[in-house]
Image (tube, rainbow, N blue to C red; front, side, top):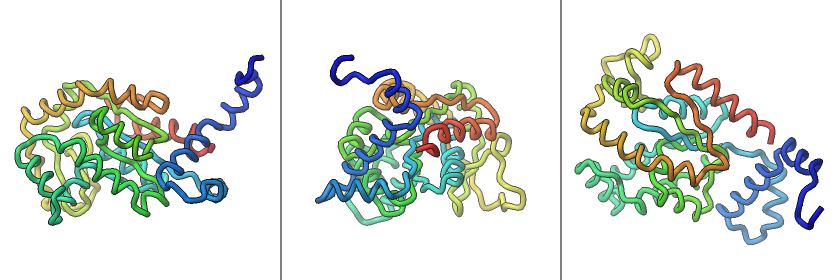
Length: 260
C-alpha cells in the first residue's frame, strides 16, 4: 500500500462512521468563526451537537418553501428564505435595501454581491449558528455559490427538487400567500390547514411570463450549481405528493446527518 492510500478496511471504517462528514463539519465551523485558538475551538466543537446545514433549490412551483419549512420543523433548524431576507432588507433604510427595492420594482434579480452579502449575514446570526439552517432559493448562480464558499458557508446537503416545466407552471397558477405566517399555499396542490382564514390570503400575482422567465433563469444555471455542490448533491423527484417528497428528504438526511 502506497503512502496516503487507505486500506479497504480503513475506507470502510471512514464510510461507516461518516468521518468525511465530520471533518467537513469541523472545517466549515473553523472557516465561519475564524477562532483565535483553533485547537480549543475544535475540542469544544467535538463536544457539541452537529447542526443541520441544508440548501433547497428548484424552479418556481417545485415546493421549495413548503419542504424547507417541513425540514426545519423536523430537525429544529431555522428556515432562511432568500426572498424573505431580501424583503426584510427592503424595509430598512440601507443602501442594500434600496438596491433590492429597485431590482424588485424592475423585475430583475438582486445583484450577486448584494444578495450574497445579505444571505451570508443572515446565516451567521446566532440562531442559525446554534440551531442549524435550511436555506431556500439560494444560491442562484455559480458566482453566488463561490461567494458563500469563500465565506466558509457550505451545506451538508444540496437538495434539488426536480419537477417538469408543465407541472411548475400549473402549480404557480393560483398560489395563495399568507402575510401572517409567510407561507405559500395552493388550493389544489397544497391547501391551507382547516380553520385558517383564507380571506386574509392574497393571490400570487405572478404572470405566466414571469413564471416562464424564472424557470428559464434557473434551468440555465442548474448544472453549474450541481457542479459546485456535487459531493453533497441530492436530486429529489418533486412531482409527487408532498408527504412522499418530504419522507424521501427525511430518509436522505437521516442517513447522514443523524448518524454523525
